[in-house]
Length: 445
Image (cartoon, rainbow, N blue to C red; front, side, top):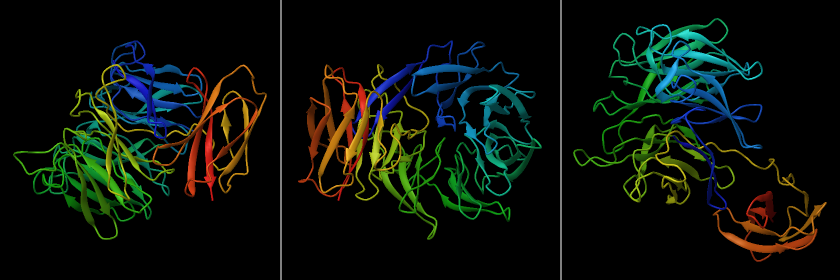
């Protein structure tokens, strides 16, 4: 019925942290969010009290999953597709369901994380859209939420809409008609200048989808890229992200090879300054296929990470990594059923440690490192060290390669990285039973 897992890009280790059991939800096929209270929230399209889906939370510090909302069709149902939650400025979570509600065309709902209460704030109908898209973004100036529906509108090709979370008013801003796209199934990306970038599954000259831009201030939308088999087809559930090099990156569900041979999808970049799209990876049975989620960039190593639900191994999906500097695509993990299979949605980057060079998070002991940054010699001190515990400290570079491992035998010890190049390194102190004791960053000058 699905799993919730975590993956460490430094140790390259995947761990299943929760197995869905039906009563607390089943078949989650969306992306998680981390709310301001530190909890992870998501939707499952099945299971729960009425077997029509749930909203759940997961506490990464305790490992506890909690069923928060049991959908009953009247308050919506994510069946056929669980959409992404979004935390707005009012601190509430907003989401959409594919069906249910007054007209069975889906709803917009709000979940109050303080009061732990959900409420339907809008019922979709066929004129104003039906069958919700993936999720919301919020305009920084007006506070309006923007999103998609997959169908509905005057041409039944889907709409882009705004929603006022105070007045509960929905307004169609784009009525898709094929030439400007059709059947949007993604989440919007918000760029500076109140510009929104989005993609649609269909429409365009080849009916393979488009990438477009919408100006909130002027109400104008512009088609920027028309997908045509060779540069990708049908971006389903994916959205664009802006990487550290200023380019937008995205994935298509299919394409990369001219029809009828077809393709298993593409990873592409788009330059918003030059309006140039470039195919970077043509997915295949070796590097994954039919991706349904978006990419995430790790700020520590600058590389992009993503999921694909199919691969050429046991065909249960994989995690892959793309280096925007070298252009190298690497498969990191194959799912095999026991650790999950067919991953939908996107990875969520969650920091186990505090941000900052000298801020170290310790789970069992108090750790201090000095000097940090240094020329390569780092002194560690552990307060309240348990002499009976047997720990190892492992140090990794940003490529995920282990560069040092030392047994921790007392409360004070030294790590020597003087022969390693300058840069950021990550350390993990691992207990005898394999659990994480502490972790943090080391800076070699």
